[in-house]
Length: 238
Image (cartoon, rainbow, N blue to C red; front, side, top):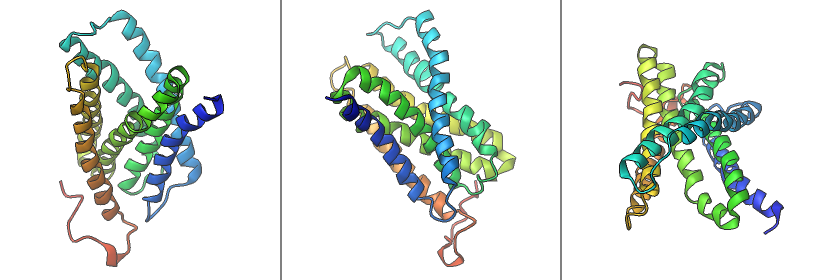
């Protein structure tokens, strides 16, 4: 395969998902320049993650066929550090932006950062693994990062507008994304157990169902929604 083709199929999934989320920001779309910057923050978050994770990997070798070692690797080294690296940019920078003015913006910005991270990571994997890796990750790792981002963004969207519980809900955002990410990775890491990898995709299915509901609820909670479109439920009531 040509370099151009590999780069194209490595970039396409993340960009496509970012556009999909942007289209669903119906009531008060975010500035395109800020979304592009958020995507770039995702690329930077990968750099931050690698700067922390690579030394840890060297200091703490993991036994490939040890279930406990792989659990630590999946949840603490991979999931927590990756989600925390994204969280730093979402919660630390974008959360404070004046354009973050409705609950859905938590999902929008989280997905943009997540897709920047996933796309940059995908380029590395595809460069070394080729077209087969690109196709596999198109239907696995890239959507997974998007789902984790939606779940994180949902809780950050709530935190922004329920200030009495802001810190607690921000922590829930990080923990939820880390938990689903860790479960997904763990069952792939222990794929030496026959058939257990299926549970990775079961966890993604559950995350997908929750993510669809999260997007719908935050769309309905927008202060910019027309009165005739407002839901009868009080979404922001915890």
